[in-house]
Every structure is written in C-alpha cells, then in structure tokens.
Image (cartoon, rainbow, N blue to C red; front, side, top):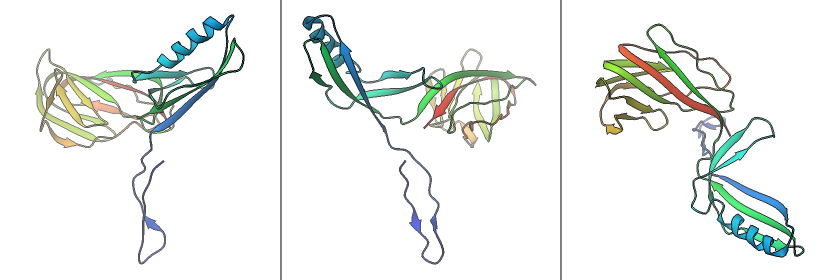
Length: 210
C-alpha cells in the first residue's frame, strides 16, 4: 500500500487521502529433479524463458480460490546445482498491476430485466461495459453515466470504468458524456444496474483481490 497523509495543523489526526497500491513483487522458489545431467541444462533454459517477454499470466490454484495476475520478469533467474540431477531455482517477477483476479462474470440486461452485480473478491472491481442499440442512453452502476454520443445499429459502445474511456466500434470518443460518475462494483454486496433508452448492456468484470 502507498498512502500519503497530511497532518491537521489545528486538530487531531490527519487529512484523509486516497489509498493506492504499489506494484506486486513475486518470487518463485523451486526444486527440480531430472533423470540425467543433460536434462538439467535443458530445464535451466526453459526456466530462463518463462515470462521473458513480459505480460505472462501467473495462475495460482489449489490454495483457496484460483487467482491470477499479469507478471513481467524482474531480473535473471538464479540457479544452484546441488547435484548433477538436482537443481534449486529462484525466479523474480513483478506485477505492474498489483491486483489479483479470479472468476470472471458476464452479466447482461435490457428492458426491465437486470440481474444483480456481485463478486467475491476483497477490493472493488472495475467493469468493462458494452452497450448496443440506438440513440442516447443513461447507465447506472452505483452512479449515473449519461452518454450523449448516440448508438448506431451495428456499432457497439464500450466503456472502461477504470479509465473512463468511451469507444464506439473500437475508436475512442471524446466528449461523449454529459454525466460520468464511474463507480466500481464493491465486493460481497449485490448491486443493481439499469439502463435507459433503446439499449442493451453487458457488464464484464472479475473477482478482484489485493
């Protein structure tokens, strides 16, 4: 966690500031046994190549809920040959995005049918919303987002709630909102959504952890 606070000069405590998180550092330690010395060197090459281009998906399962994060290399793997067929290794990784993700959800709604939004993570989840239909519309997910850029048949709108960027058919739209109260989906609570106008909505997000 990274957080700055400003002391109150004429009162108790400090001024409240937003909470943000540092990047996540991950170190994988392991032991490897091979049937001969040649395979040991082949294994070193394979371990060296893991995640070398970055953007690799690190998945952890079998220890509570399955979670994943996107990682980049943070240095060169270290190897210690204990015997000719026994290797100890350490792989340093870095997750620029500090959050871990789990189960994914795809919730659709239109007309008078709007299922609840919910996730089992520990911190708020930022959704990506896709809207189809025609004309202008107002979307509510814990806050109103009114879109003045009209929908056109066959051209979907995509709104990334984390960045507040609206795209129409994949192209960024500037000034397409009259109201833009982007709010995340809070963990552990069922939350409602609705949309006005001639529009259908699909909300995609993941269980999100820190």
